[in-house]
Image 1 (cartoon, rainbow, N blue to C red):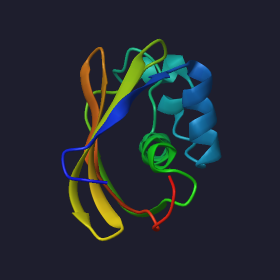
Image 2: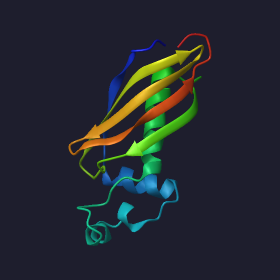
Image 3: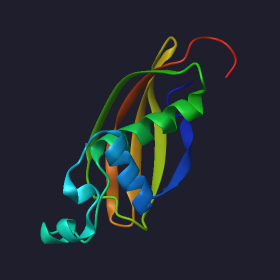
Image 4: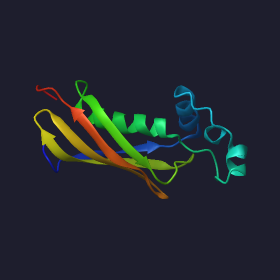
Length: 130
């Protein structure tokens, strides 16, 4: 790990199933995450991904890169453009700081509308092979 290190991009196809399953798994039963008609009545073009699903995908992105011993210490994200069915979210990341075995990674997830998620992840990677 070194400052400036770029993580390889990860493309995530945003499907209706991913959106609904993520909402159910996180016990988020808001209708805008599973009912297209109610989402449209509330001004959205379709259902959209919830923040907890996005949070999990950001965490997965970082731990997939740093390996099975990686421990997420802090995830601080902000949502922007919504993820709708049919979108592809591309996650990118850059190591900003390193202190011993702990790094802060800046993460951006973008789709056709713009930035879906921005934030930082603090991750500890114990010494040893990656």
